[in-house]
Image: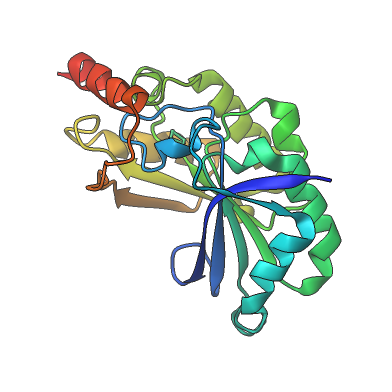
Length: 227
Ligand code: SF4
């Protein structure tokens, strides 16, 4: 039986995940290692304060807000970590409960193999793409990820689901974006055909008690290289 390892479930969200009232499901696992990660405890399986849900258990937890979802056109936001790492669970969940009338959205970095991303096509109503940066050097410095993979996945997503189902989030990250680099990022996205772009100030989490040694080392490496 499939299970989803969940860090937290955040209810009654408005104005952050698109239309309506939503519930955010934060699942464990992430392929990136962002210097200022807000959830480094999702990086590996060693963090113990999580809960595993079966598909029906997750539904029981989420249906508390059924009336809010239906009245406002909201639903569920799958986030993380990187929810696409759990696409087999998520696709089974959505296929089982697609008649609820809920929206099923996803916040993703797209840093997964293309075939993993493709499993989500036809299931997700709206993708919220966490772009980090649209410059290869800055992206890889900040995330330790593979920019080319991210970029080609974004192109593939755009071709397959269309711009009306994608919002790209463009963060302004302290130290990484010292000037107005975010404007370059917007231009690159617009040139790709992305029409819904949200720019925001990335605030470094103040409570870093749970940050692991690895996360601290990543942040120190980043600060050394950027200075
Ligand atoms: S994408 Fe970056 S910020 Fe988000 S959980 Fe992964 S490492 Fe952290």
